Length: 153
Image (spheres, helix red, strand yellow):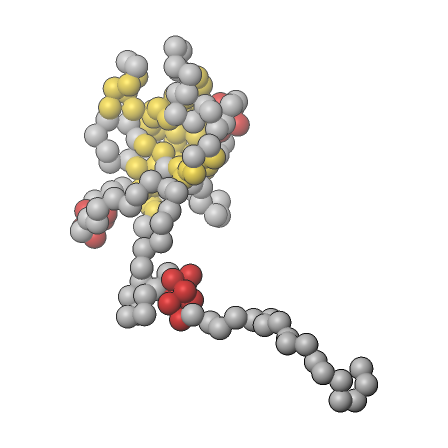
């Protein structure tokens, strides 16, 4: 450019920040309270008193044996060591773990003090914990190698 040449009107590189949009993105409102974001997951359940949560007995368990339940596409019968004893449980994990043998030896987290339920004629005496997002489901497992029966809190 020669000195004194007229310049074109410049384009705006960055727009003004809109505080409401920034707070919305951060999940807050201008009042400071946290706003719930829309989620494609299942809606949150109602709150329960902390004492209700404390009643659950969560333990580390080691799967000793796993097999398919005859006549059921999704169910496995698992036999697990929970430290003081062994428990049988049924779990719909076949779509996510196609070979039941891959579960044998795996440390998992289970709820041990639910009332037993009879499913397809088999008594289920505990419930394993898993997390899922539609087509993807995974077992909840301890980060470190803890012995069966270790308490989860």
